[in-house]
Length: 403
Image (cartoon, rainbow, N blue to C red):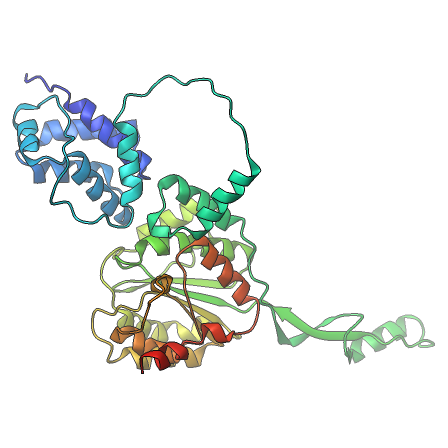
């Protein structure tokens, strides 16, 4: 039998890096990977890549993290060929001059690989001084940091902050009435009923006022490759919103439309997002906004857009199939709801201008145009849903700028 050298150790370090980057990789997966590599008898780098991919990647959104980690960890081509041929005991570490600019999520991949680059040292006893100023400063930095540039630890902290975020108080009056001692209207039935209980000698006027109720919230979230990192954390916000009220409907779209409302009703946020991932087949794929909006308008709008519903359209507006029909579908969606709010991560750039055809087709048919790329913008959205429309978020000012 050929001596495997340090290949099992290198695979174990690679699995640890994936776990630190956010993938659910345990000791059982490491043993499965070693058995798969031995059974497959891989002959080149591509075979080795897909063998480990089949073991470690369980969800669509994990593919990008695995791909970046594999390219960084098993970097040198000549070494990779030697490793497969002779099961070399050495791990690659030289830089790649042809490496491209890091994609979203590359920061936590690099950080997790850096943690595995050194042997673990025994813990040292240190005196830790807690500073309130430092805590506030770190929280402010986290609130302003872009979702796509967060590390795995920062994403976990952001999820906790989203779960504790105060949800909007956007209740609106309905046609129904409820009893209120300070109401402006007299309730004849309750007045006569209370009077008869006392024999009719004393008439105590009972009053009522319009009942307040949260309007339905319908979220249409883009899960294409350019939006996946932002949508994943926005789903945590929608899960917290779903947990605090009943009428929240969530749809994910890339190349097709998926209703994940029931999946987000799970009490555990991680389980809710896992169910969403299993239900969606085109995560981090292309974008067909017009087709998906047409499907929503045709099959779902009359079911979920009643009683003054608010629609949150979460997309960058970069349409792949052309924008010929997008304006018509956006106009129909706008007419079917009380308010249409477009949340676009591209607004994080100061010099943003609506040059793309898809963005120009959508802007005339939305009520508000807001950025959504960090916790601060998410908190601003919560406050915005609790009050009326502001002039700062009027999308028509952008159209006048480039007209």
